[in-house]
Length: 255
Image 1 (cartoon, rainbow, N blue to C red):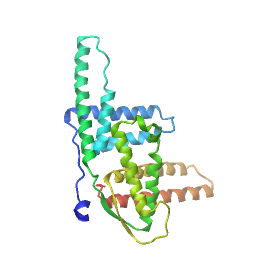
Image 2 (image 1 turned 90 degrees about the vertical axis):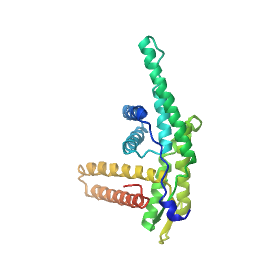
Image 3 (image 1 turned 180 degrees about the vertical axis):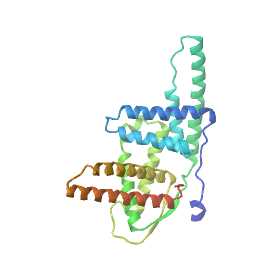
Image 4 (image 1 turned 135 degrees about the vertical axis):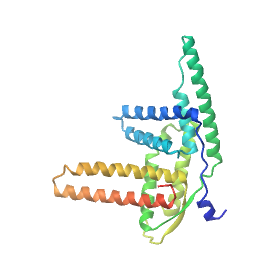
């Protein structure tokens, strides 16, 4: 398969059965609620953003097989019913157990697809400016993704696979463009997997939110030096967000 064939390949998808859509959606809403309840915790903002991203991809029908596997497993665990105390309870427990069984079957099917998929990479050409955007934001992906290593042995199979994919993709990018800034000015052609493009899309959305927050904060500034610093930070974030958008479009993420 040549480069043109690879860049146009379709990433394998896993369809969520209609009867399980409600369970997946209810778990995403529950995950968002839990994250909002714990918003005082340092990691809560990242959890809220992740839940919003998952909901957006769920609505758009662009969840990856690994994401579907993780959601199905967590939804099945969340549906875990209590021991019945009446005939009606027994009927409901039986229904929930049937849903949980189907969710686990969906998880296994999604894991199989994720394992068989090469996460077909897309060829993207980046100039010197875009290369620095890609380098800095890929390092941010690693920075924000390190926490699961603290409980690595407790991760679900889908979580472990997703973590491995995130770091493998990021390392591959940095090995090509360099881990440190470089004065090189020539354009570089490299392969970026759809899963890493999705990570970069998360970074772009986070930057857009940060820019809005900075603009709100700027309105209350009166010191000229602080205003100058705020404007410079906002402009820098805008350039990075615009650069990410160019990379994502080049990677045919569908933006």
